[in-house]
Image (tube, rainbow, N blue to C red; front, side, top):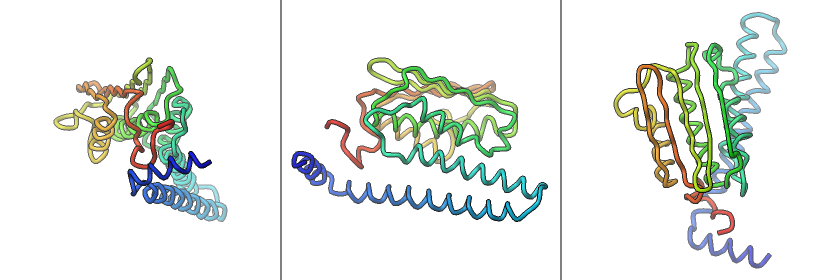
Length: 230
C-alpha cells in the first residue's frame, strides 16, 4: 500500500493538476448521466399519461435518442482499464449513435473488428477518434438517404488501424484532412498526440478515413493518470 501511495504522490508532484482534472471529469460524467436519466424519467412520465398517436411516437423517439446519447457518453467517458475489448465498446458506441435516429432508418452501419483486445490508453484514443469520424459520416453521408457506413478495425503487434468509409457525396477543401466542423480538429489533434497517422480518400462516390495508431503511443488521458504499469 505504501508503494502505491508513493507512486501516486510522485505522479501528483509531477503533474499537480492531474487530481483536480480527474475529479472534474468524474463530476462531469456523473452530472451528464444524472441529467440524461432525469430527462428520460420525465419524458416517460409524460408518455404514460398520453394515448397512442403521433405525439406519443415523438416521445418514444426522443427517449430512444437520449438513451443512445447516454450509452455513447458511458463508452467515451469511462476510465480505461488496462485492457479494453474494443469490439464490445465499438458495438455499444455504434448502437448508441444510431438509436432514435429517424434520419438513419434507410441507412446501414456495419462494424468489423479483428484483434479486439487493446491496451487501455490507445483503446480510448481509438474510440474517441472513431466516434468523431462515425458522427461525421452519419451526419454528412447518411442522414436522409439510403447510404452505408463501414467501420473496420484491425491490429498487429505494434499498431491498430481504423478505417471509416461511407458512400456519400464526398468532402471538399480542408474537410479532406479529418472531416468537418469542430470534430475535425478533435480528430486531427487526437491522432497527432497519439503519434499516429490519418489519411483521407474522397470523391463524389464516398469518403474513406484511414487512421493508424501505435499501441505504444501516449494515452488519450495521459493528463489524468499515468499509463498502466508506468
